[in-house]
Length: 610
Image 1 (tube, rainbow, N blue to C red):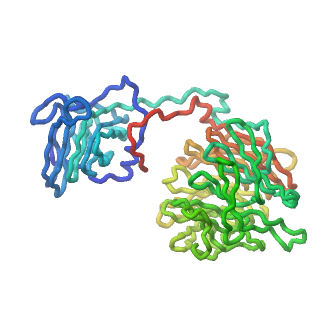
Image 2: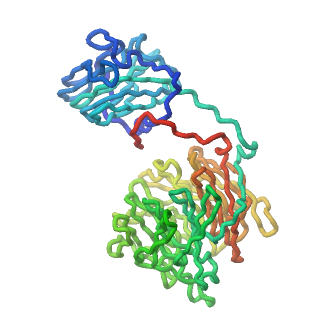
Image 3: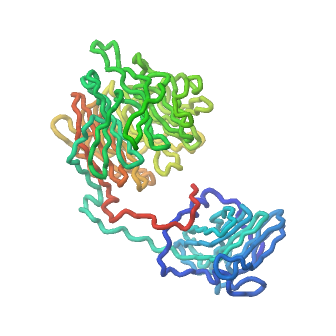
């Protein structure tokens, strides 16, 4: 074997991501492809059978067969006592008798037990190509420091075409030692074919909607899936002035396991408040409705300064300190450290609030305005703010009521620097009222999808526009996405097929556990003409696939959300005549008609890293 062959010392993010796909172990019948995996059989040149010394560079090293074993009587210790560059490694011998035979296109699970005194040790692979011979393949895993015997496992990428055998072992590229034992290599089983459909052909292709027998008892316009699996449904006055005058404010907790609702005493009118789930699972509810517009139009909606925390364990609200300003229709975004920032909404005098608010997770209170960075900018009503990976906030352009804010309609806000940078590309920014924006899975890709919208003032037909932005780019900009599929619309005489470029506002977008997005609900005009269409967006292909449609109208003040069992629940609808749809519908996606849900039965490693 040529000892000058080099290996990569520092792993790239991509290599780590590939290597940390953890899976359940193979069946007991799977064969270990490593010969002499515990170094028990002696060989030549002081090395065990089927193992040999390798490495390169300027360093002082030692290879030792030691009795300090995980099992049996022997283990292999590789040590560097001085290093200028390079590494040393014990590898499976590259001979045809020892190097495991592999199949192109397949993957293999590798595992071993180790102890290390250096952080600079990694699992290194070489491969044999029928034409090019032996060559370095990849480093798949860095071994963490371990004083006692520790198991490490990793899955290889797919074996490249032309490769017929591989060799692997542990490289030491820093002063210290790595002692290893009990190597294992097993071929990953062939993918299990999709289970047979357990429903009708239509259910397996498009899913199914069911209207539940029990109605939602409150006019809920806010929905929060709690950490205990229940759902908090917040109504306040439910956009009903008579309930407001009577001081009748309601919430309910729905239990999907039993189908039961429990009405919760609600201290204030949380109609059109902001809300966010805190790190400990409680729900922070900020502001709400201090008053409805006057009959003569001189006074509009008003927001109050009150704030509350809902505890899922006791199912009660507790008042916090007040915010610095009123915020009817505010944003609510949780930051990486657990703090919450809020912008926009209407003040107690019905004017737009330019006060930014910050909830301190450490102090469990709203900070005074002088401790919060202020742009003194009006962000509108319910401005959609999405936390970026680097801690900045992306204003997607989704908002409610009328035109978007001045500028391009989308921006990046850096709280620490207190700067706002316009983001171009959002199509028709002033007809994205009541649109939906979601951070697409996987979140590490940092792509946002914005869907549909209209304008309650001009009240044109809602649009089918979608836009996608990659926030990882140095100068991110929206690009046009595929149009929403057309469905049916109720124009007053029952549902009829949509025509032209009609789309929908009040649309909901729900992240599904298979990495796709369900868009559902909506209406063609301001609080009128519900659109009956649902589709699933695939971020990988950037396409919409029409699926079964919710039979219930889901326009203004509706919400849709993912239940713990993988279904989607939809509730609400508050058309212009002031009525309320108390019917609740539940969507069962196609993946729930494909047999039992998968379960993780065991893992071969304890390291979980992006």
